[in-house]
Length: 356
Image 1 (cartoon, rainbow, N blue to C red):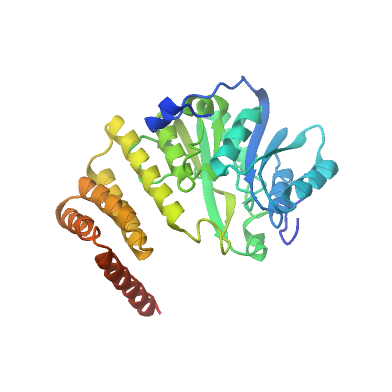
Image 2 (spheres, one colour):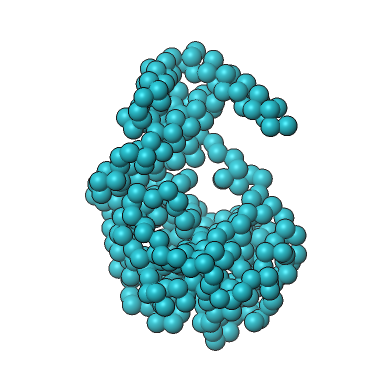
């Protein structure tokens, strides 16, 4: 693996969409011992081979990796095809599916339809799996038994930062294992790329929403939570999340903010439907909507800011409710939006100077 010390060879219907839900997926029973990883890839030629090699380095077999090339304009498909020709064997198979560029949700959905594993995991095209990940999470799913198993994640910028986290520095046995009560009201949301889920649960939850371009994974996990699954957690690092300049996470534009606002409104609806939108949970949402409103104001998006502030007002209490309500009223004026954006930028500069 380039720069990373891994051991080698060891259609959502419209009715459901309008209600903010996704229909169950008709999936077959799957191959009993097979585990499938789904990798949506768009212009990922620089990192996809590292990701595939980390899959190849998994101690668990048999393993299936479904790469969905989401209309890449670079050599992503060729890189994956070369890897397939060199590494595919009886107990490790990579499949590459090509489609027109429709977004990460559509790519994951295509992978869900194509995969054959009894357990399913999602991986980003520039991330790295620790070698123990699959065997440890599979043991938790089978041994508990449970519906979802997940572990810790670490972030990194360069390949050199990964070496100390993987390849021989962890035990292959799950440590500090605990059962998590994954009710709709929960403080921590395990990211989709840290989980391994039973095929039956994926079929019941349904597909990712293709109208969301940002925070679609949070909305998906919210629907998972609403199924009240049995969840097991381990303290082992199972995934390494690459941070890159220019990634969606690093550069949030207008479309991302609008998608995030829609996603969290959908999550709010899921929580209300299950009687969980109250108390501390509602207050966290009020804070989040307020932050989205501020981010929208910084970009001069008055309409989105007003919508976010109103959502914060509806969920908030006390001072935050008053502040959000006032901002929602004032941001209808474009001049105020410009002045408020300058104030927010100044506050950001002051905070950075204080930290230094």
